Length: 145
Image (cartoon, rainbow, N blue to C red; front, top):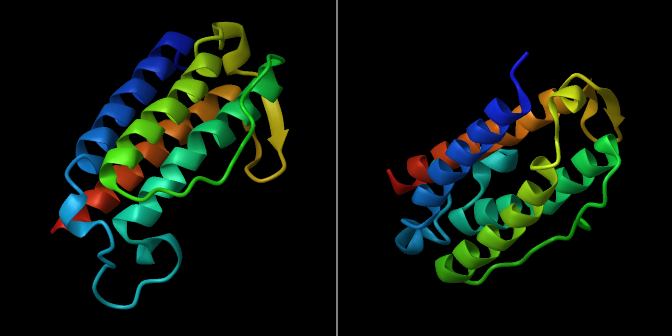
């Protein structure tokens, strides 16, 4: 099982990848993918950005509850432009990372049952955060073609 520091580093790297893609999305802000995808695959860059900006407090609240520390309040975020998306995503990711910084190696293997994400460990949920950021970075890259 990875250490808390290794997991924190993987989230930081995934966030950097996501932000690099987000910063390039002005020309495709409202562009929908070609074909007829369903669900998240049908999102434009703005919808992806709103989802990721909202995900920081969502994951932060869940992880905080699992390790017994105060966390951010989840909120649905609406974004008007890439510039506001970058600023707001930096802010909300900071809320998440304030919680993630409090995760210790002892927390990583702790089992939790999240109402939306199911049963996993704290480390497993942190792994989902990194995967989630990388997955949506790839989605933005694909939209840019």
